[in-house]
Image (cartoon, rainbow, N blue to C red; front, side, top):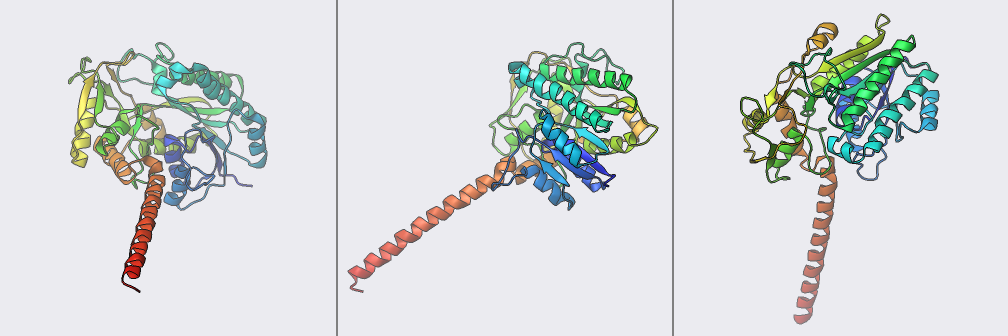
Length: 387
């Protein structure tokens, strides 16, 4: 029996794939479930490109990959019946704030109902160690800064996405209070940015990015003409919004350390941790850091503020530092440099290889056509010369 086996849902996504690197590097065996709704597949492969690259980076293979949805209880039970998991790490979720306002039922069905289905199957098979991918959006408008884990949640959540995270946390707290044996850790992310230092995996938003760092990176590779800065009238030093940015690999390390702790017998019940850098940076700070770390000028235009944007938001991370012995090691410039390494190597994200293959194919077709034309010219020349 494998006593080191972890189930990771939604591992093909940005946060999940980087956390998967950390898990594999730390010796865990992993089974992945992902419905691949937001994944890139190349050359007809069943496994998403991000997971293939994770295996290449770590030199380790997944125990299994299942292209399934967490709302499919029959498939979930088949997977739990086949594998004996010691814990579940749950990333699978829809996560676009703007989209959640347009299709809220999809978000409640996928995020909330899907999590309930997963928890019910876990309970049936006696798996009660659970790490939940939460968000700082559960805090809503901050009452004070920096925000610690005791800050009230749910009040002022400005969108359905944030409310799904809040509702799931409430469900998890109720579950831990009502049933013995559960050990749950909810990790509230602030703003994960950057990429694995190899530049082989990174954030790959579809369409125009919603988040600052991938938007800057796409401007740097000229996929976008300029960066839109939403507002310069915030009550901050330079007028632009201030947020807490954490390197994605610092966040990944936090997941691995949390897993190590919840597997200990003395850990029980409901646990919650902030994961950020513990420092706030303005939009202009991030632009300046990116320009300094890459040498690339980032043109930007000031646009109107977005409804619901707060002036400042950053985390108090002392609880994670003291209880988990975790601390972030990467700087803002590192985040920028690693984002640029990923984006410059793969300007179209995971689609880059597909674009290159199509380009090479087109070049090949053009070369073949040119060869044919040259051949017929030589043939005709030969005929004209009596050869």
